[in-house]
Amino acid sequence: MNMQEQNFLVKSIRSVFIVDLRAIAMMRIALSVILLTDIIFRISDLKAFYSGQGVLPLKALFAYLWNPYYTSLFNLTEHPYLLSVLFAIYAACVFCLLVGYKTKWSTILTWIFLMSLHNRNPLIIQAGDHLLRMMVFWGIFLPWGYLYSFDSLKNIQVKKSHVYESFAGIAYICQIAFLYYFSALLKSSPEWRTDYTAIYYALSLDQLTRPIGRLMYPYYDLMTYMTASVFYIEFFLPLLLFVPFFNKWIRMVIIVAIALLQFGIFLTMNVGLFSITGVVIMIGLIPTDFLDKVQYRFRETIKKWEGAVVRLRLKYISSKEKTIHPPKPVLYSEILVSLALIYVLGWNMQTVGKKVIPDNMIWIGDLFKLHQQWGMFAPSVYKDDGWFIYLGVQENGNNIDLLRDGAPLSMERPELISDLVKNDRWRKYGENILPIDNAHYRPYLCDYLITEWNSLNPEKRIKHLSIIYMLEVTMPDYQTEPVREEHLCYCEVEL
Image (cartoon, rainbow, N blue to C red; front, side):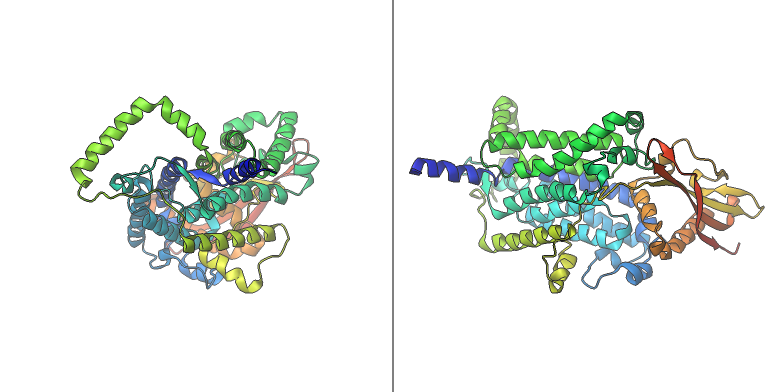
């Protein structure tokens, strides 16, 4: 092999792990928008999920779910008003991340608040939360505030290159690969690998299914093809990320394929943050050549924006501006991110039965919340569907359903079960309290519901409440078992 061939090979291998500074800056902005949206939705259920009057007060958290290596700023208080202050500080950190103000520190603080939020109530956490948290973690080591940020207004760029090579970029790319590859490995049931019935069962879960999913449900053959497509996309596409030849074209194919996959999931099922986060994290993979072409295509518009930036710099920041060279990896940062990447790989391997991390090192994953498990609908899809009934008995003996805004009690199947689910957090919480091993959480829900109802509806107060789950198990060939009535909890109050 001559020198020219060697250089070509080295350049091709290096291209696998290159990220574009513009791409990761855009990813930072998009992830920040998701985080702010998530905060808004969480605040709407602040009392229920984070306060001492809610479904998981601190005494229950410490008794059943706490790990000595966990930390949470949201454990400092159980009072709703003080919790609102913490959420406001968290939102301010995310806003700083959005605009790129003190980007490194705002990323670190956002990650700390995100960890704190996830540790405060693990019963409502789902795959999208883990993915969002891990991307913010890798963002600590990425220079995603170098462009399109308030910090960049102070920069006099001495070089126009947007290419960035570091172990942080490798870790970011590997995290995307881990997400889909290990998700495919965990899908080990015949429903995914031979029968291809997984999407049939997934779309039978009325709590999850959106209208388009219900329209698709009668087309069994289509769902079979889609199941096979999802499995093989998740299995093979992550491996293609590491092909050193034609990498920029392969990346674009992967970005489009994953975006279509996640868009399809979003249209058919409500899986919380996962779909939109799954699309946004692909932004950082956009190749430099593609962004150069886009930048050239819109060069006139970009010149106007650059002119506005120059005027802003001259007016407000000229006295503070300094020459900042394009970011270069720092040794200690590279060492830390490399060790974290090795640990995360080991953790993912353990989820598929390959014990890699010694027991005396598990605490690292707990402390920094690096643990992850991408078993969405794996190893098989849930067959248990159904709906909750919050049966309240009023002073006059009338039976009402709190979940249907106090309507007269009806045990009949609702036309749309998803209409009874406020949001994906409540759906996940309901899913987690159903197993008998988690029965100890149910009284807290019962107490919260009866207290909240009586305080908001003094003219329709109830004296006791029963939480009932109407279990409906999906069978093959569009059949279901007879609905079973399961009484989960009972509580009463003195009026």
